[in-house]
Image 1: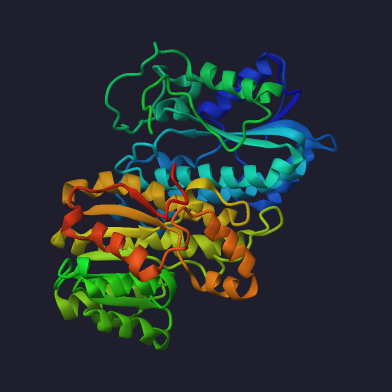
Image 2: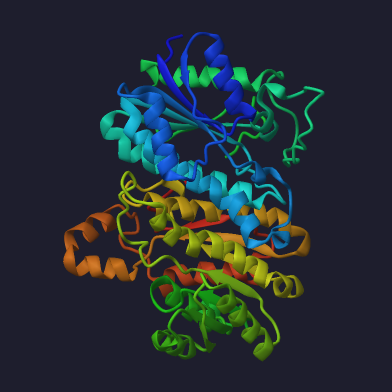
Length: 231
Length: 258
């Protein structure tokens, strides 16, 4: 499978994004990663970080998996203060805008942008209103950007995975994990046998980097092994 | 709109951004359904036409100062409606940023422009919900968000508007589950309708409007009062008692696969 030669991977330092970055590095790809502590809503800091990492040679592919961790705390909206709402819902949207805006300056023509998000919006999840709000906003921001950047042959697509896989990545099933994963209301089990969501996503990231995927943009690929199947 | 007659008799509704366009049309439709309509506007002096339309349709207008980016104003508007009329049955959040019809230069703009959109469409969506919750819980009422087809397909010209309208759809799906046990229904409408911006475009760029209309199977853009109003009233009425978590695309068939 052909893959990009230089990738910029933006994560919050944990979850599926971090696992993807690790796997890419282990197999020999040149992975550029901003400091996981970088404030992705700080446009100047993000610009400086990207410039410093990327230098004068544009990247071929960008992977963005960055939802503010506060969005995963299950709570009724009526219990949230305005600051809590802002952090849980709006900060991830701002980060998506800031990151995508700077990606535009460091990605090559014909490059591939992949956003990774959790599959929470298709069903909607009680007590995760901020997360669902942010995810749907970012999904559609990606579509709008796909339309804008198509003239440069840049594709922008979204891959969604189950919430637990998004939050934990390769740590899923690990006994030492102390993160509480909210319950997503799905009826039934995945159609396919269980497997590694990181492998599943990595396969799609690779696929989207191939010439065969040059015509796919603004798309949503759901890698949940056939759990939701909606609409 | 005779089909709406009596559908909201005695019910109390707050419509934000009600001074013009879809907000005015939806307000008039609620009036035709017999509602007491709180006309939420930033400048009360700009609400007279809407108030007249509500009254002419048979409803009871109440003009309320309600800049939805001001928490105190939206809380006061809700409190006034409840104090004067004893209940709140529905909130229709229709207000958008004053820049919503402008093109956004995504690659060169700043977070200030994002904030213009987000404060009205995202933060106020959350805040109005929180402020209205105890009253909607009592009335087993409805929360309706006026979204947009742009919030489903993504607009090249309006990436911020698209994103914040999409945010509302994600909000609707999740909150419908959260508030279902309280029997509060949460839905959205994605209208394709004549807006003040489109009215202006009709004068300045009539050919562009014709091209847009040519994409609509029903051959025209929706009328805020007679095309967008009735489905909005329906979703807030008892007739939609089993409908929640949905986005109803009202576009004359322009969008058929969203």
